[in-house]
Length: 272
Image (cartoon, rainbow, N blue to C red; front, side, top):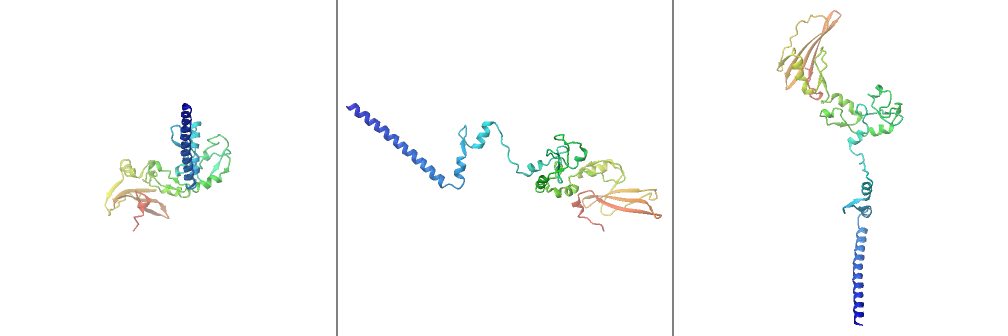
């Protein structure tokens, strides 16, 4: 009888302990529901969409599923560089700008390369003559980097402004300014003067604001150029005296002053 009573007391103790634990668990569940009820909109949904990772870290369910299948999710194209890359020509890697013509499979090629091709460089199909109006609309809002970005230009601009900028970009390659010569040299603006001094040593360079341009043998037949360099105001100027063929029995002479610099720098000087 005594043993039976002790066993009954033991069972009641276990039941009471289970009840207390169950009450605590229920209270925690209710507290969690209250927190979710007072959470800002989307908070409960975000929590519901999240799962525990293998290491106990909380990760979005979509990322967990992608990791399980071995897939890598591609980030959306949001930056200007990402959007501009969609317009790269597969031949010259310049940008395909409006008007944009595609092949029958939707591949693009720039207007400079297109006349040189007999088929699509991507799918080898016929080039066709299909306007891609959707890509043209996207291009109107994309900021394209200057084609001389690799030379140091950091400007990005709309495709409608791109051509004008690149024609005057200070990072573009410069031709040899020496007139009447067959020199095919090209280089950066900083390399122009060293090129003239090493490859065209016959050109005289004078220092100062006031100089005398002395031209000899002005009666030589045909067109003749006299060239001189003048260094003043912290810049270099090329002075050219050009004689043209006779007009109505008279010789014609033209004087040209050219700044070895950018167009913006040239705006600081005027003829007087």
